[in-house]
Image (tube, rainbow, N blue to C red; front, side, top):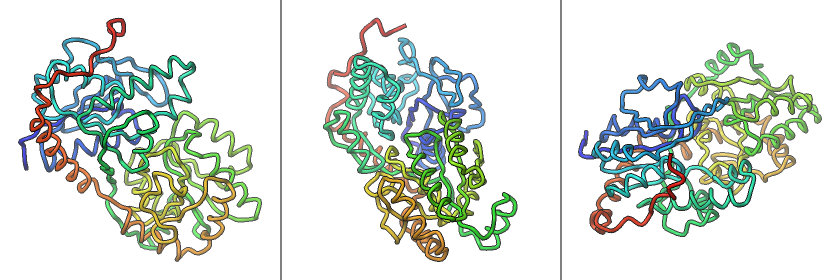
Length: 408
């Protein structure tokens, strides 16, 4: 193993918080330490943390904890001594997976000692900003803060070409590198007998189509389109089950909505599941993953489903649909209830066709985390070489701290 490099992986959210970026950071830390170098996670404090579970360093800095279903902490890195906590650890590169608090923390570090920074842009933050920030001045500040954090990175990575388009929308004009995420579920081929046994164990009927949605239970993932399309199918007399796997801020409202539609007898609501093997079993017993989100920049769940040869139904030209060819390694439709319902009607009774397309997804869409992190590690070395070759360590740092009133 090459131990020359020491990498800091920054994230605003880490377990016990659970989301896509948490999953990414865990896999980066695990595979970097296992096969390439020494890596530590830099993240805000969380009173419910169980960091002893992990066999690598997790450095937590000051935060404000929000008691909520999601359990997020807000990082508060505005303390002089915190910068030296990172500097004194001798990191060769800082890799931020969130352009908010932890990216600003890395700016404070670089204001004292220049260390090359990579930023991976995972999320379309404009969705959350428009949804939760009430006033224009506050929105303007948030976008400015976000853009300054992005611009401060020595290299910007995106998980798909569509993510690059999102970067342009928030004002970023620089270059970026596409660095796809991987999947932590191994490729598996489930036999018909295995699938039948899992269905029996989960009390899922053997002889009807099974759909699945996996991800955060939040409306802007286009979950309403899924439920309305399923309502159309039921009204047409079609029998099926829809597995709803995940949790999130809108889950109470989502449950109320599908009950209002009269879909309670068609829905299997799993609640929160963290057991990755169990999650893969839910994918395996499903004929198709319905994932109409145009918010997601990569769609980890698409690769998770592909790990066990389950195809995905995706919105044409969405980020999640990059690399997907309709009827070959996935299914594509328009962003509408009628289009989703029509595609499901087209494929749901042709089980062999869905299975064939699922095998195409496993062949073409699946990427392991071993492969993804190996490519990232190769690029780290290029970033570091370019940083010192271009004399960035000797140039005045232009991304200054916020006004003093922001410190506490």
